[in-house]
Image 1 (tube, rainbow, N blue to C red):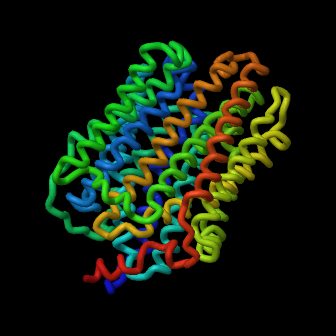
Image 2: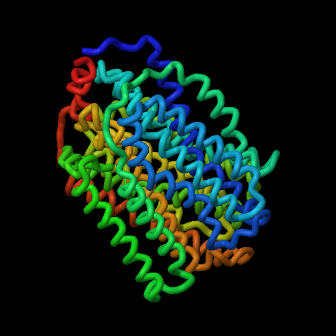
Image 3: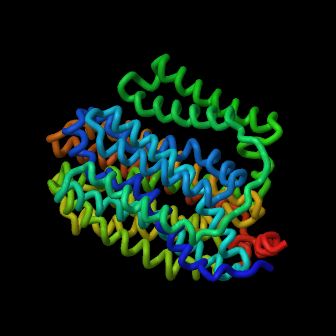
Length: 477
């Protein structure tokens, strides 16, 4: 068994803060979008690229980030990721045109793709000596992700209302510098020899980007248009080529054998559909609050604080206990179905609705579902991965969540646009569009819950939901 690092809990705060900030980067711009649209000249259809540029770079490069973490050393990659994230934040804050803003967001996504798998590897190294401590650490680390996503909505409102939208990016500079100063608390993980599969990284990122691009443009040029079909076909071809490359090269970015890890496939499918339902929910809920109910940026962010509180309480105190008692499968499946119920409730929003009636109760139900499903899905995906593949397993599960988020948002934005979500000032039409998006997200979450309950293997032992105790033995070997 390995010796416990006496600074491990301080190091966990550094890692959890990093996770909080990286995921917050996907949501903090939500409340600021209307201001950015006016100042930078985004069209309603192109506005989502402020979000998707980050998510495509983040999701597309997470596998590469995991591989680099394993090869170069997790602390070194974690540090490099923060340098890149700070640089992207400066570009995004200083942007004067729409596409410079999109470029800055993509650079931020590259930084996030380096930080996230490195942080997971460091967490495993710090706590693998004790499965109970590892479970507690994972609960705190896992709670930082959805809490960061929801808290970003509130902080975006504060900055947009009282300062200006560039501050949603400027905030990353001092926090990033403080995190860099604290990296001495993190353990030094020895690098391993190996090659980087650059071609694999290029093909998987290009395939994801082309798929999202095709879905975003489809409502404008037609789903059956030759260009749309060619783009979707090209995306499928690139992703198929990625799999061929992984099978052919000596040191692939994603060794296909890792999919033999028990429950990795169903857990990643659940994470994909969870992201495809949850991220569009907060995106359109923000727009509903501001464009239909007339909330300002600060009020819109504050309106979602109850969700943040519920997420934090459940993830840090309740979900971990339920996971130990019932196992991952019922929590993931049940959580997705509860999320679907909350989204179905939100789909009944009215042009003359109110926060207390139309938003608050439904958003709390949705947050309850998210808090039940997220950590169990993450733990199920990582539970059997060997220590030396911790970065890879983390990269895969975070990739599926981010890719699901990007594709879900693109598809549901297309659906909302066809139902009137692009008719600014027309409250009934806007509400119809947002309602359609909520209903679509509810269907996605319901499918995820049903599939999880049908196909995920049941394992009644609480220990099975924790990363393997043998991992601690491997670290100490």
